[in-house]
Image (cartoon, rainbow, N blue to C red; front, side, top):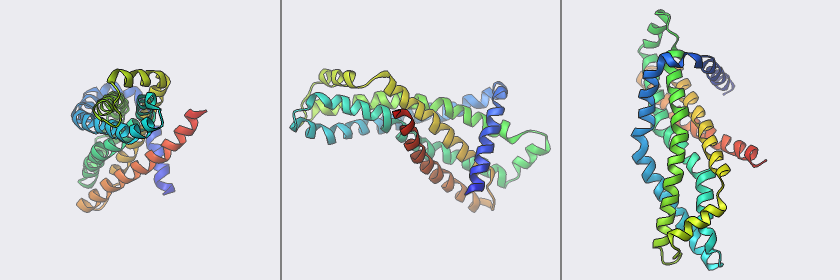
Length: 245
């Protein structure tokens, strides 16, 4: 475990040192950005809309029973912005994109394509890891913003359409405006940025250390997704403690 942590820290550091070379890999960055961002919008839209709706459906009736109907929009908006949107988008991207990164790089490792790159004096970190990490670092925070907006809309639609809650969409958004600050949205976006680096580094590292043929590729993909989710949850707690100060 400690060896893997050390290798991931070194991979992250070497990628940061290679950032000035990003412009040379811009075509790969754009390709990865499209795959992570545009190709994920439909899933993000569906997931976020129903998360916001379920949150309103679960909390709305309880708040209305206690005479706190003016807080329904604020609760949904605050929860989506600071917690649910960043962590759910990170888990979604870990399952969809992190697994693909680990599988692609792992296949290149197993079939000795990375060895061929090193023979041609091409740094695998610069050629393979850097474009993926830069793309996911830009795409995931944008997906978090999109998720927050769609989640707010889902909560408003469900709150206005449920007889047990029965508040107008205007009242919902007024309540949310009073409770949610720009700082809360910024905290969620910052979490998304940190989670993006976690998913990218873990997935690329698992791909680079893949051994053992097709079965090894499957193990690497599984480890990439599981380790990413574990680290996302752990760092979510750490970041929450830091941002609360």
